[in-house]
Structures are given as structure tokens and as C-alpha cells.
Length: 175
Image (cartoon, rainbow, N blue to C red; front, side, top):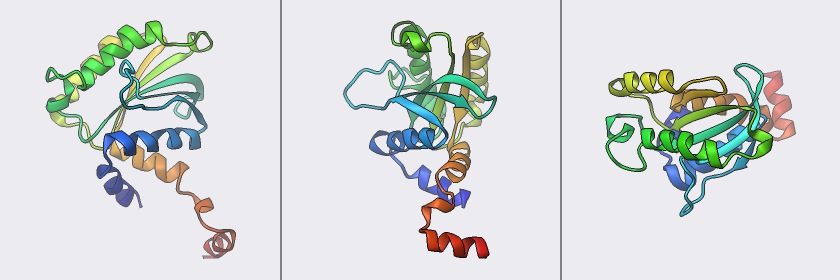
């Protein structure tokens, strides 16, 4: 099933598809979306902001997602385009964290997530690792959610037995 989900994810466009799926996934994970991606509005690197308990360590956090289509590669890491990953991460740190966080979220750990429907290419693994190492500090964490991670989470949180009608669930359990 994960392979089918992963293949489906690879076909999604960033705008109007992947950015619409992620708030639903977060909500299913028990993480409440606070803002969603909008076209034509400057978002300072954050496409989706959400608050909730991180399933990795059971800590209440502010999740800040920057969403990119395809693989994380040299073409979109830091090629000089404003939509590249590194400039988006810098903008989150330089602007969003200092100017856009509500008072009720200021004391929460901020988990900045680069989210894409592809993989992290070997050619930028060192760049990503170096960026995380030099920018992680108390209260700031980084994560990468690629197609594999998203497929696992979608299968776990969105595709459970409750997508079937009640009668079908009974038959599914019997089987």
C-alpha cells in the first residue's frame, strides 16, 4: 500500500494538491493546522503552521512546514531562486520566527519541516545535514518529510479501516 501512496504523492503538484493534503494529514495526526498555504500571499517560508503533540517525542510543538514539489536536489536547494529550500529556511528563521509567532506559541519548541513529495538526493544530503547542525538550537528543531515518510504517515493516519462503510469493516475484521 505504501508504494501506491508514494507513487500517488509523486504525481502531486505543490500548489493546490500537496499543500492541501498536508493540513488534513496533520489534523489526522492530532496536530491542529493554524494556517494553510495561500497563493499570492507572502508567507515568509512557512506554507503550513500547526500546533500539537509531536508523535516522535510526545512534546507540544509548533510545526512550521515549507513545502516543495519533487526531490530535494541541487536544483532547488540554493540555486539563487527565492523559492529554493535554503532561502525559505532562512526566511523562516529571520522573519517568521521573529515577527509571526503568536504569544501563546512563543515558548513552544518550533519544528521546522522541509516537506516534499520526493526524496532528498545524495548531492544535497551534506548541505541539509550541515544546515540542520548549524541552525538547531534549544527550541528549534529541523526535520525532512519526503515521500517515504509521508506515505507511512498517510497509511497510518488517513487510510485506516474507517474509510470503509460499517458493514465492510465487519467483513474486513472477519477476514
